[in-house]
View (cartoon, rainbow, N blue to C red):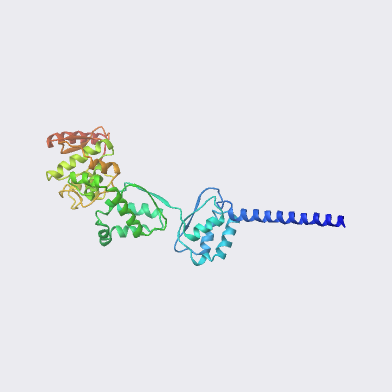
Length: 346
C-alpha cells in the first residue's frame, strides 16, 4: 500500500509539472503573438487610414510593415471586436508595441501626431501644397478656403490678408484634421502670438498686426541679413509717414508674378496691380509672403533714422547702401547697375 501511494503522488507531480509547462508555453506563445513588437523593421512605421479604407485595405496597408504573427493577431482581434464596422481615419504608429496595444490605439482612434513646419512660403498655393503633403486634407480644399471671402471674413481676414494669419513655427496636428479645424487652430496660434506687448509696439509704429505682417514680408524679400532688417523697416516706415510711394521692388516682382527677377525694368513698374507699390500708395493689400519671425520683430523694433532710400550694394554682399536724398541714392543705384552689367546680369 505505501508503495502505491508514492507512485500516485509521483505521477500527480508529473501531471502538475506538465500542466504548468504547457501553461507557460501557451502564455509565452500568447505573449509572443500579441505583445511583442509589431513593426517588421523594429523601427517606427506609420499606418495611414483614410475615408476610403475598409478592413481589407487596412490589412493590405499593414502587411508590408508588420510581422506576420502580429498581423495574424491583429486580424483575430479585429474580427472579435468587429473593427470593420467602425474604422477610424488617422495616422497610427506601428512600433515596438505588440498587436494587442496597437489594435487598441487604431480601434480607439489614438493617433500619432504629424509635425508641420510652416515657414516663410511665398504664396497661398505653396502653403496649401505644403500642408496637403503632410495631412489627409486635400491641398485644393485648403486653397479654396483661403480664397473664400466669407470664410476669411469669419476668421477676421480677407483673401488678400489671410496669409498674415500664419505664424512661422513647427506645429503638431492629427493627420485627419479637417480644413475648418486647421484654420481655427492657426487663428488661435496667431492670437497667442499677438500679445498685448506686440500689439502696443505695432500701434506705436502706426500699424495694425496685419500691416506689420505685410511690411515684414517686404523686409524679408529685401534682405536676408537679420541685422539689417530693422534699418530696412525703418526706411519704409519713414516713407509711409510722409505719404511717399514705397517703391519696393519685391512688390513689383509679386505684381508681375516674377519672383526670381534679378533686375527691375521700367516695363515691370507699369503693371496695373494693387501690389505694385511704384503705382499705388501705402502698403500692398496683404503680405507678399509669410514673413519670418525675424522680419516681424524687425518691424516691431524698427531702427529710427532719416533714410528714405536704399539700394543693394555693388559688392553683392546682400546688404544695402542707404541714403537720405534722391541724388545720393542715384549715385548708389548707378554703382549697383554698373556692377550688374559687369557680371552680365539681365
